[in-house]
Length: 181
Picture 1: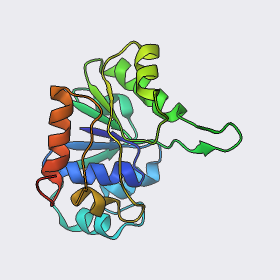
Picture 2: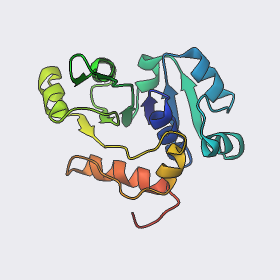
Picture 3: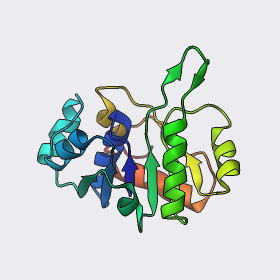
């Protein structure tokens, strides 16, 4: 599993999944990558810091997207989509760029978007990039409490009825402490 974007959404998902799976975190920031490889949280989140320091996690970080996605089963995209008040739209360019690169490097991989995106984005990006490999899984996380919210989720949603979506939801549930979600 590859997680692209190591902010609070990506990092908390990477740590959650690395409890039971091999996970590579990818970010453009060498400082974030170095911190994660040193088992230090690059963001303020008490549980993330504790898990990185004390838990046995199968987690490595890199700035090399192409090498990281080779052979991956799932790539989670959790890059920023800041809201632009002037255009009244979310800037989804980083998400689109990552999806485009990932589907070029590893065409069969399932890409799961966990960034804030507008309604219709997944259908639009599938059409434009000519791929059916992209699905959406919204996050319900609080900044500073992201790992806690992943460990005790109120719900897990994956926006597709398919085996790959079911498997992905199972991976999220596997890492959570709260059972029966």
